[in-house]
Amino acid sequence: MRIKSLTARVLLLTTVWSTVALVVIGLLISTLYRRSAERGFQDLLRAQLYNVINSVTIGDQGALSGSPQLGDLRFAQPKTGWYWVVEPLGTYTTAPLVSPSLGSATIPVLSVVEAPFDKNYERYYQVMDASGNRVQVAETEVVLDTDGRAARVRVTGNVDVVEDDVRNFSHRLYLALAGFGVGSLIVNALAILYGLRPLDKARAALERIRAGESEQLKGDFPREILPLANEVNALIDSNRRIVERARMQVGNLAHSLKTPIAVLLNEARVLERSHGDLVRNQAEAMQGQVQSYLNRARIAAQRESVLARTDAEPALERLVRVMRRLNVDTEFELIVQPPHLAVAMEQQDLEETVGNLLENAARFAKSKVRLSAVEAGDDVKGIEASPRKHWVELAVEDDGPGLEPDQIREALKRGRRLDESKPGTGLGLSIVTEISNEYQGRLELTRGEWGGLKAKLILPGVTKDVA
Image 1 (cartoon, rainbow, N blue to C red):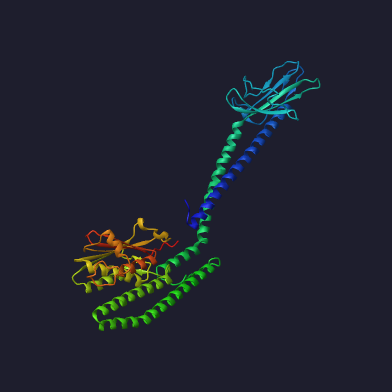
Image 2: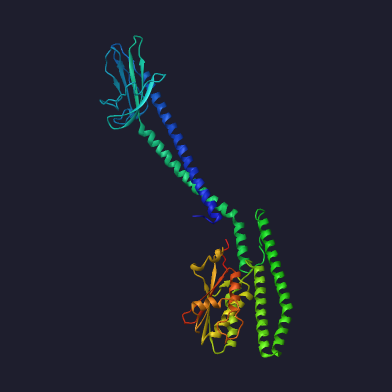
């Protein structure tokens, strides 16, 4: 799964790296300590081995004699794994000397092939004693007198001592590294969060712009982010100038065409009925088409502007109020949920699209019309492959006769009127479709729950999730 949060990415990478580094360091230190402990253990056995050699002699009767005192009580306690043995070598026979800890037991001996002597004529190997202890054996052979009589000397130590020492050290080491790792992660997290705070400020500033609370990216940003903030502000200013210029040009064009079209309409009233109706119809169609293309030009100039925002409830309430005055016999119902719902459109465009739908609904309704504005469900998000994450569903439905599927397709065609007895130019639905398409939305016509026509608009909404 792709992580979209920059903070989460940095925290995850530092956590993974710190964990791997501490595990490797722990294993390395533990391994080095084990090698040092084993080397120290072997050096201890070697020192004890020569202490035994220095304490043993051959008496006048040819018997081994001596009582090595190695300074370790474990050599005096039975079944500890700490033993020493001196055995005669050669043709003379005498009783061996053994430590009190060994008693009458024996120490297993490996052959020279299995454990050869080194250059110092010493060898080291591990065996199991009679008590089940795993012991390390240090062995050598020495000449004890001038007659060439020799003895084999062995000293053993319990390997569990080394293992226990290494285990205790590793346990303490891992606890210390774990505490250090947790502390480091907390410090790193605080440092990262503190370092990324300017990005949070920039995000909050963008949210204020999208919510219509500010017109510029304001804040005390560090040097790394300041150029980006300046570029965003420059882009917003440029976008605003383009919008204002487009609005001015649209207004100029509308004003220049208003008078000629009004003249044509006035002249149509004084002409003969057949010719007058033709001129009037064409002039009205021309007026509607000019207005449609002017709207498209204006919308295209400011499309995707982060400053386009209209609160749905007050705008729709004004439209419903006007429709109630114009259609006193029709009941109009308004539903806005949640109340703070906002649409990412210019107010003029929202009122024109919804106004056209309300006029159509009032024209064909028997007694009631309902206008609702709610947050769109997940099934409509992502339409037109838009990167937006938030959509608003506006629905206008009436209790009129409604339309069949083939009539719906016909009604969406520009200038097509299904009922010639009703006034109008037939451009309303096509204008609604064009405006909604320019905002990457869409218009759907279906049969409503009252049996009449239900016109549903899916339009971009305003959300504070701008990350």
